Amino acid sequence: MPANPADLPADSPLVDPALLHAVSRLAATAESPRAAMVEILQLAIAYFKASSGTVALLNPDTGKLEIEVHQGMPDDIDEVALRPGQGITGWVAFHGRPQLVPDVRADPRYIPVRHEVRAEITAPLVSENDQVIGVINLDSDVVQGFTQRDLDGLVALAGESTHVLLRLWQLNHLRGKARQLENLVSAGLTLVTKLERQELHDAITRDTLGLLSSRASLLFEYIPSGRCLRAVSIAFAGEPDARPPEGDLPLDSCLVGACLTTRRQLEFINVQSPEYIDVVDLPRHPALRSLLAVPMFWENEAVGVLCVFTDHPHRYNNDEKRLLAAFASLSAVTLQNSRLYTRVFQSEDMLRKNEQLTTLGLLAAEIAHEIRNPLTVIKLLYGYLGLDFPEDDPRRTDVRVIGEKLDQLEAIVSRVLQFAKAPSSLHSRWSLADIIGDTLVLIRLKLAQSKIRLRFDPPEKPIHVDVHKGQIQQVLLNLLLNATHAMPQGGAITVRAFVEDHEGSRQAVIDVIDTGGGVPPEIADHIFDSFLSGRSDGTGLGLAIAKRILLSHHGDISLHSTGPDGTTMRLRLPLAP
Image 1: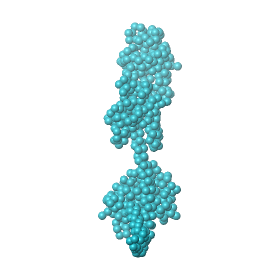
Image 2 (image 1 turned 90 degrees about the vertical axis):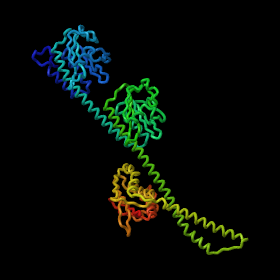
Image 3 (image 1 turned 30 degrees about the vertical axis):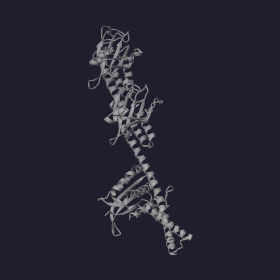
Image 4 (image 1 turned 90 degrees about the horizontal axis):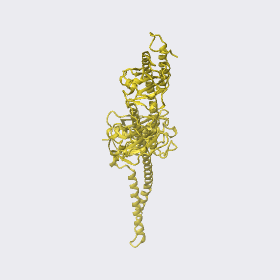
């Protein structure tokens, strides 16, 4: 135990170095600033032989002096809050000067808290920038129980204590930042794994609670078509306490709607105040007090609003606002990605349906083609028979009906064949790079999900072709999906476009190159045959349809190369005049 200042020689230090060392060690050993304040107060009371004491801090929000720890005081002392200048401790906090009061009964500033107190010494806790952050106060039950030397020693103790508390607060702040960053990263990793819409909404509100230790979190989705907000998820700490607002809420009538119109965060200290009674977008629960609402945007497109609630009046600091804004931005990206994934899956489903329809068209065309040949023979032979019966012979009517039905069958077959052929009126002049670029947009997220890198080398000079854009895109999508299936563990796809001479003419060429395992040798020569597939879930018609489409465009498709290192599929199209 450090020596008492009354027992020290007059020329000794103002306070025992062992006491200051014990206080300074708290910067490394104390679990929290509050634990350090408890230990500091205990050391001070023992060293200065005080009967009671307090450590009070200035609340930056209220500006009042609030008691943080105490010893030897009544239990309700925690409820005492002094204005600057009120009482001896309030006077010290306001003026920043220590005070020695030999007899508190003779000092009009004294506010009696414990009636046995007779003497008091008080020293301010002053930061490095000369700002008072609090006060340490010691009481004695004896008149003139403290000396000037005691006051000077308490000032020295207060200085060391201030350094310790500031270091601990800074450490706690950094730890809090680290936890927030860890929670933000963890929440981000969780969000990117959610594709189902409602599951993603619930994950956002649930993770928001953990970020800011809030009572409730509420997510609104913005509906552009109706300029309204829709509550899509709510989360509570503990058991659910309230339901989210129902229906589509017009933006102009929503409290948090101003977030989207102003693109700024909104903070409300107490949403239980009478002026918020008629607000339609607040969950009705008496425990919810302070609200922080953050707008969610993705590439200048409004996505929604993310809200957090506390169950006590709370003023959100800048760190909390920045953290929620960062998480809201991350959530906006994941929501938009979810929408894009949905569109990709819809496009893929539509591609499958188109493939099925094309398959039916191909089968119909093949059947019609096979029917037309014998039908033509039958019609020719029928004409050569030269059957002619008298007017009153019933067989004359039969011959006429047979001829009409043969003509009708020929017309049906011609219509089927004409329908299966792409109308030339749908062909138009297109930039080859634009066709490829528009196709890659449709499948880019699918490739990212499959961990496949995509590279497109556009031609050095514009290449134009006269084609049916939708059919050429169907061929490219089929090739890209085939390449994706060939790389289940991920890989790379390269698309190149260029012009070369082929069989005496200039042609546009598209190469689709993957890094898969290659086409099995036993089917390499037959991949364009109908109903041949290397996958258990394949129809075997994709490449056959692609071949027919390219041939109808006076082009072709071929297996340019294949092997363990990958496959190159080559498309050729005539250049537009």
